[in-house]
Image (tube, rainbow over all chains, first blue to last red; front, side, top):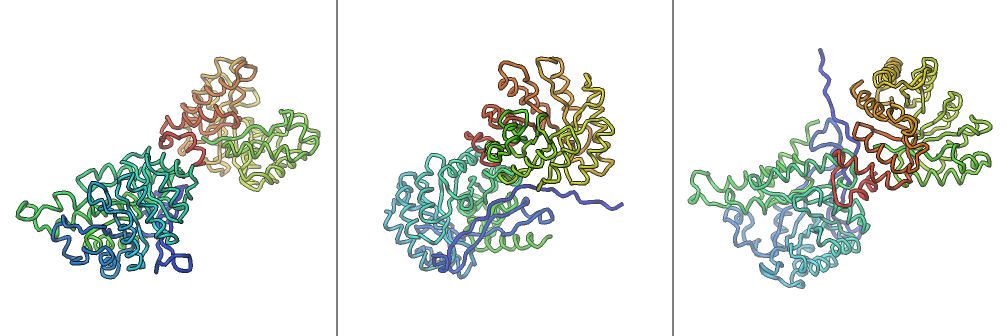
Length: 322
Length: 263
């Protein structure tokens, strides 16, 4: 007796967000990317469409990451000393889809890099690469409220992705993104109710719905991954079920989460039973990335080029199944 | 919950006057207001006083469709009036309604098939509205079985357990609620359960409160749709909150606003 496959039918669709603007569109990017637009759960391509495959942004810091383990520094070499060189390497050698500049050093408790210095870095990256750009603030509300508008203006017309707006501090960033034509990241602390509330607050400010990307807060495997996975999955189920306030693409932070935990950081002398660090860190980062892909992430922010390559291969395989 | 706006009905003075004077603007304004307030479908009933019910139904349907783009529930006890409405409908319509009476059932299933419409069946027949849950459910089953046999998808069958005014049949409310539960298990996928809500409060002093509580109780028992006044904000808020408590959507502090925005 033939068995009929039971296929799920969904009524909703995730909005499609465009990042980057070419010269013809008023920017200077050599390519633009689109994310979102799904009508199905991740990679269930028999049940609907995933018009845009998930992308990988490689993260560049405003500060040389002296604390990184050697096996992570090695692929970038001296480029780590200069954010523009670093970004260019990610573009030219490691085929990143986007560049994410994380303003870690701008945080008052880190290096407190002044706003004008950061703007110089932003401009140098804009000149160095043609990829679409993500700018991620320091996480310090007061500093970000000075910093992000300045970065936004320096990149006006480039249709970047700027973040992150949080429930207690979203107005300045939202107004800035609306004014300069950028997309916005809304961040909620592993809390789906706050995620939804923040999306409503943004729509009250008339932020266009095709310019919002959700960051539900993510963690590495073994460090809260399950919470993030469940929340992302539930968010996507709500979106496909027709809840337009949840129907936005999602972004996952992988690199910085993975490379701060001991399973990736600890050297072989410290943990001989755990095997070679070179392979362990890459395996941890790519496994975490795959987990987030399966929960519905549209962009992953990653560090190690080998993990990036493995993840990209995995995406290509999953996108082939039909 | 699917909200079917009840305000375009010849029983209301303003609608009756608009039909008589062929004043489209009044009808279109009521249509727009109901849709803006969250109605996803509009009920259309020419009322008992129209001189030419067939012509009035056609005129109403055409006037409404010029103003809003939602499906219509064509509401009449007379098949020719229903057919006049169906002929003019641009979107898939709901026939409101058949009963379990065989001749009527056959005629209206025929119309549903001819026009690709959905069918609303009242759990009553030529003998009236049965008192018992079992007898109401039996009529519901009869309607559903007849529709399925004729090839209508179960998705297109909406069953109404029949709401009577609490003032005149207080013991009926409990059986109506119980009937909702019974009707839901008649088939898989389950038929959609709908009520004409406002009937429950006929003759009551505080109609909005009675409507509101009856709707919430209905939802708790599995009600999917209701023909009601969407301009009653408190009623709509209660409905949204009942859906929230049943985990039909994700909570946020502005959930009332979010629900309306997500429509």
